[in-house]
Amino acid sequence: MFLLRSSIFLRTNSHFNNAVDVARVGNVGRVQVHPAAVGDAVLAPRQWLPSLFQCIKDSAAPRGISRVGHDPCVGWCKCLQALTATSSDQEFPSRAHITSRRQHGRMDSADTAMIQPYCTQILGDLGAEVIKIEHPVRGDDTRAWGPPYAAYKPDTKADGPGEAAYFLGANRNKKSLGLSFQHPEGVDILHKLVAKCDILVENYLPGTLKKYSMDYETVRKINPGLIYASITGYGQTGPYANRAGYDVMVEAEFGLMHITGQRDGPPVKVGVAVTDLTTGLYTSNSIMAALLGRANTGKGQHIDVALSDCQTATLANIASSCLISGKKDTGRWGTAHPSIVPYRSFKTRDGDILFGGGNDRLFGVLCDGLGKPEWKDDAKFKTNADRVANRQQLEAEIEAISQQKTTEEWLQVFEGSGMPYAAVNDVQTTLNHAHTKARNMVVEMEHEICGPIKMVNTPVKFSETQPSIRSVPPMLGQHTDEILSDHLGMSQSDISDLKERGAIR
Image 1 (cartoon, helix red, strand yellow):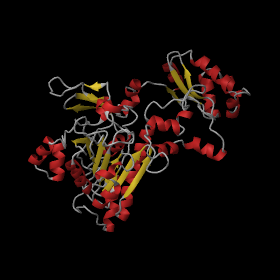
Image 2 (tube, one colour):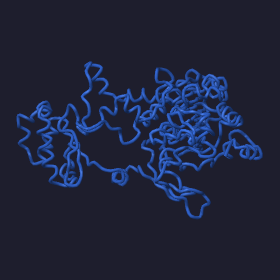
Image 3 (tube, one colour):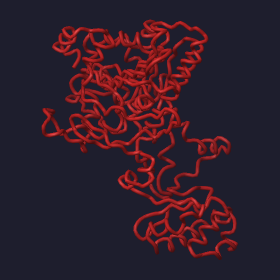
Image 4 (cartoon, helix red, strand yellow):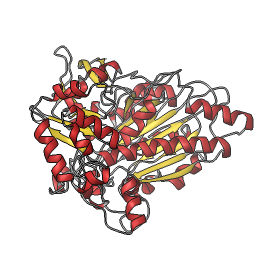
């Protein structure tokens, strides 16, 4: 759940983890993000970046718009993120129909818990203070998705194998609040946070939150400026609205798997949960647009984000070709391109390299590098249309030559040639790549329980205000006392009483 000083509530209906994120933007000051829903919550205070939120402040101020819950002298952004926000899986079914571990087992697909934390992590990187609300006992399900784990330091009293790499990869710049929907006090805390927030992001099945008075129609009465985002597999409407939606299922049913894989091989999914990631990106962008819209109108709104819609949209030129031609797509092409030859990976002596002869000039560069300048005037290869018509022969001849050198030797041959080319690297090689290091894309952070850990950095470079990793992913319930006392003014005795009753951790 994300809380921003200007009421905006975003609802993320992620197919596996039940989650709620709320955010709020003010007129001046800092940005905070608070994930608030039983499950996972992360909070990270920080001087806000004068980017989107500064634009909102500047555009809103002259209009003199007065919003519910706004302090004109204080500007901050809060975001609530709630994952697996339940004490009982049976009582709080998510988009993925999470059921009791004992009765029906659990769908522990790594594709199901990335959208919301990825979306809120982006906002956290941009300076928002994020509160991640987690189940008070087990926390975010991805905490158990290992190995690998970042092991706890021997001198700590922490139990277990460590912090799961999966969890560490999507929860930086957040604070954790352990909270249960099963307790009325937990729902009351959420309502109080909603009153202070601008955005709520949740990932429950449509209609699930109504009986807990956390549905959009209820919370908008608490905060009319709230932007409420619901992320689900198939959206709030349509024949599939109540169907569980996992990344791989959506990849399959909405075209991506059909066009992914080797030409004569079976359909395959992308190596990462790409539909989850693109949906998280669409959601974060939509939140920002809704914030800007509210700056003009003072009104919040409900954002309905579906994996199926985002997947359909990202079929891009393939979808456009089918719509314009009225014909079926051309199927899977592996690393090749249906309309450009040569444009694919070729085997080398010790690996693979990709050559991109995107036009006749670049094809000539490739011919010279391969020691085959005569191909440039060969009638079978002279134009791209000729090369497409004779694809199999040309690609076979290129690979017969490419296998004579190592990948590194070919990289040296084409260095500075102007032709697109690239080694096909594994992930470890990518993380240790000279360019990756030069762009500061891997950083080392100090985790108070695990010690030094390496993390992928935020990818965006700003000229004036650079996003950064300000805090490592939190331990479960690490910031509960801080959040309830600082943001809701609760006393330590009240907090202790709630902990004894199991409402919070």
